[in-house]
Amino acid sequence: MFYEPQNGHGLPHDPFNAIVAPRPIGWISTRSKAGALNLAPYSYFNVISHSPHLVIFSSSGRKDSVTFIEETGEFAVNLVSGNLREQMNASAVNAPRGVSEFDYAGLTPAPCKLIEAPRVAEAYAALECVATDIRVPMDRHGNPSGNFLVTGEVVGIHIDEAILTDGLIDIKKAQPVSRLGYMDYATISEVYQMWRPQWETSEIKPR
Ligand SMILES: Cc1cc2nc3c(=O)[nH]c(=O)nc-3n(C[C@H](O)[C@H](O)[C@H](O)COP(=O)(O)O)c2cc1C
Image (cartoon, helix red, strand yellow):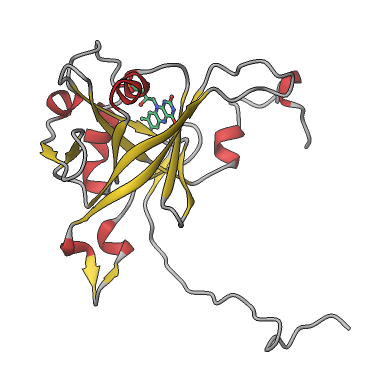
């Protein structure tokens, strides 16, 4: 099948998020200027560069996370393991501004080292970020989309050493939760390696 999103898909549910899946979940923790704590999951999230370490997430409207980052220029990205999935989901509650989703979800705010925003003590890893850019992406007609794209540079990284095996992140220990389409989620059950081809040594060169 082929469809143009503007004309509808004709399926029981919109497949878009299920096509671009799995997506990692950035569990964004922030602190307002007045000191209120906030926590919410964002699956429009990813790493966009290694040097420097840049991450992005997109908010469908100016949600509390964006507002607090606008106020302070800081946020932390926590990673969600399978055993925290219920708490992650609870933290998506549309709580009134100023109500801490840490309390609502039964999670412990731990201090960060370089930023004032808290991190999730129970998470296996957390990235301390300084916001570098907050912008509203345009649609193809040049109209503001109404989404807020936040970019941040990672300035500090916490890792629970329990997820390391021989100094490497052991993804089977970390068990990150990923977002699929619809109401679906997944954890990793199989890991394999592949090495990138090198032209000089490749045996499958076109003639
Ligand atoms: C797994 C998951 C992923 C989500 N991803 C996003 C997202 O990428 N962008 C977004 O705007 N909302 C997303 N949401 C909804 C927000 O978490 C929700 O609106 C939350 O209340 C926003 O909190 P805040 O206003 O405290 O920032 C997601 C919810 C869940 C459960």
